[in-house]
Structures are given as structure tokens and as C-alpha cells.
Image 1 (cartoon, rainbow, N blue to C red):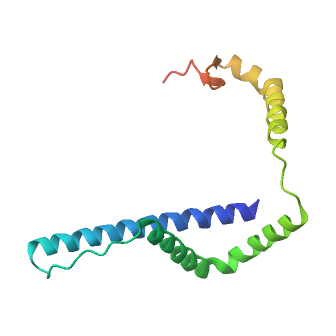
Image 2 (cartoon, rainbow, N blue to C red):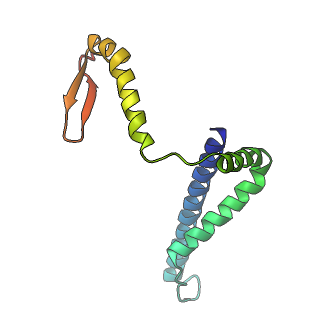
Length: 138
């Protein structure tokens, strides 16, 4: 479980860093265009970039920078993840339904009666059942 948290945190920070770099580059390009309009800089044809390709490059650059900073602690959980993947087979798709049924049994068997006694209501919607706390007063 530790390795999944490490991977998710690195991925989230990489995406955020790439997005902020992209926004920063857009702001700089906009400022440059404004200066060109004002006549401060000789007019130069704007350079067209492929946004998807530049975003991928920013993702890779951000990841490389993060990995360089955090590889000392992140390497061990990732090695554990690789070892775990080699030793264990992936979960079957059917196991999700089995887990949901087991969780529903536990929920209805031990928790739902207590929640109903505290003002929770069960509503049927098109998507399925929804549980809401109806008697909340400030």
C-alpha cells in the first residue's frame, strides 16, 4: 500500500507542476504578444507548438526533476511494488462485485440500524441507493 501512495503522490505533483509550467509559459507568451503589439519588440511570427506534445515534455521534465529530488526514499517503495507484482497475480474483475456484496452485508448488519436511529434516511434514486442525514439542525 505504501508504494501506491508514493506513486500517486509523485504523479499528482508531476501533473500539477506540468500544468503550472504550461500556464506560466502561456502568460509569458501573452506578455510577449502584448509587447509586440505595443511596438517594444520587433514583430516576430509566433511559434506554433503542439500543446499535447509540449505538455508531455513538461510532464517528463517535471517527473525527472521530482525523481532526482526524491529517488532516495521513493526507490524502496517502487522496488517493493515491482516485487509484489512479480509474485502476485492481478485481481480478477469479478472480485469487485464480491467485495461490494461483503461490504453491503457488513453495512446493513451492523451500521445501518445505528444510523437509522440517528436520523439517516435511505432514498432510492435512478443511480442506486443514497443515504442522507435528514435531521441535521445547526
